[in-house]
Image 1 (tube, rainbow, N blue to C red):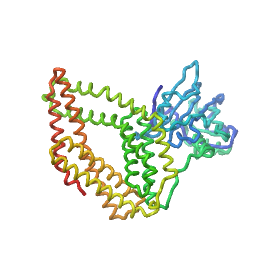
Image 2: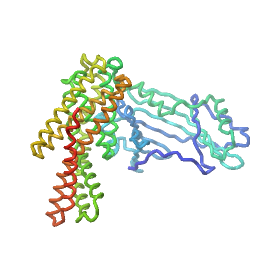
Image 3: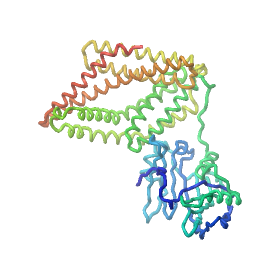
Length: 521
């Protein structure tokens, strides 16, 4: 399997380099334009027709297409291969994954396992099958001036068809003008005029876009309902839920590619979804959302080991790197690497097992059903500005109560109980932060003064979230540092450095605990 991304356009310096110009479109069998009398430019002999095909695969309800995924078998230039185009993963480019078949067997009609791994979460148990085809018969006419090549005219007879229970078929002609930098001035405009004589005009869209249009006509994706008028509590909450479902989908693709950041984004999206369903029970019926809440909690638990291991490994590795070499005694870095290597791979394998499982597929389907038929209550029709802040205040009171309990636990001197209580306050703080994200959404129609107040509140909650999160990181890292120190001692190594790092994290935790009273509302 080979992986490659779309090439980045670069400025040409070679005068013979050919660049694709405007694409033109006209009626089927439009015929070749007149190429005589082009001021010294002479056409060469047109090439024999090259056949190029793209056979698109998807589920019956187009689950891949609606998530920006294109899966197809491509046949071009005597080559035949599977190609998967994944949506922008945040680096500004789409990822392309190609699987070239063996020369003897050709393309297997079954989806290759390495591609199925990447789309399994998106297809959610549904079978992929051919849903459309683009067929081009291409001819090329070289263009020369003063015996040197100055470009070519590429003409295609295009046929686009859907391949579902019924077939939709469209035919047209396309042309591209490809000229070198040394082509005579004005040649592109003259060719455009000759093409216009055959009925060709600049194309508004390509064949891929036309196939998408036809597929939506044949098998429309279930629409997300817009329930309630703009600015209602239901519309605001559902808008936020829809954003997080989309975020979960995008992160799923990253996680399937082995990207640790994808796992982190999935956990965050799952937490935001779960918190929203918990925070706004008067808008979305809790009895109907309770199973979703449980499954989202379970998903977060399944993804947690992979993310937590990465965080603590990076924390300890960075701490060792920042420590004076004179205080790094023994094979500290090697022991850290060895400690995390196997658990990290096991956790990654567990993530893929979870994402390829039936429960995760069922969860994704349940989230889509939630958006299509939301369990809205009577309060969902009320103005969001009046209904949602009341519920955010409940989340604030819950956080304050958990924070008071943490302060009481720390006062007893029981470190384990104190750490556990601070962690509970941290989880309540996350719920509060996510509730505040909903109550400052655009649909809330906040005035200038309220927006300014909401922004300041969000900033304060972010600092609280960061402090409590770092406290929990020190809890996990101190536990790991004790294990590393004990293993080093058992192996006859010096455990001084691990003790030093443990002491530093202990000091950080104590400083955060001193600031807890100021975190109350």
